[in-house]
Length: 175
Ligand code: ATP
Ligand code: MG
Image (cartoon, rainbow, N blue to C red; front, top):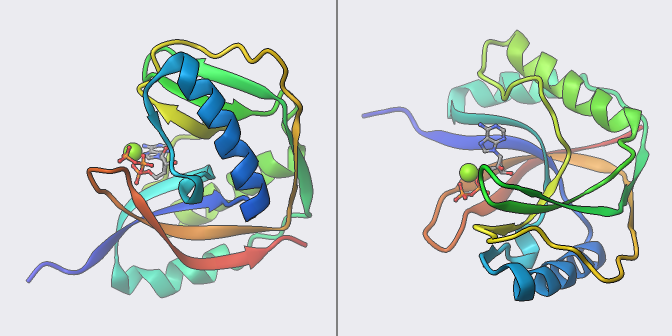
């Protein structure tokens, strides 16, 4: 029998209050842009994508990820972008905190060091709000959403027709 594997990625997960505000923003954008709206509980910011990992590699992965030490940081979500090539509409930040870049880079380095595949170095922090959006979104007024980031998580993704379901596998506090 094939070994059990899970589809893994690392992400920042907003607190419920922030997720609610992002979902409201997604709802406004959806009225103009159409597409498929991300469910509130699935809103996240991906730091690194690994893909299928067999269960017996998990202890080693948890061990190396536990070495990552990055200070807490703050994200100001102040922009809504649209990628024409994949029709994704997303929330992002015009100023990317250096600690966020460091976190993504350190995670990717640790994952690569144990020979697991990890997404390319290019990291564009974004939170997907809509998939299959027809057009960009130009909000009339957009009050930035403030996010004090205190932890990051290893997540498992289960692909489903209604959109992926995500499960938290482990989490680490920032310093
Ligand atoms: P679906 O694929 O059903 O649309 P999803 O993209 O949210 O759902 P996954 O494909 O499991 O679910 O991806 C989990 C997270 O990792 C998402 O944030 C996704 O954008 C990101 N991701 C997936 N593949 C890659 C990749 N090759 N490189 C970088 N990030 C990726
Ligand atoms: Mg995907």
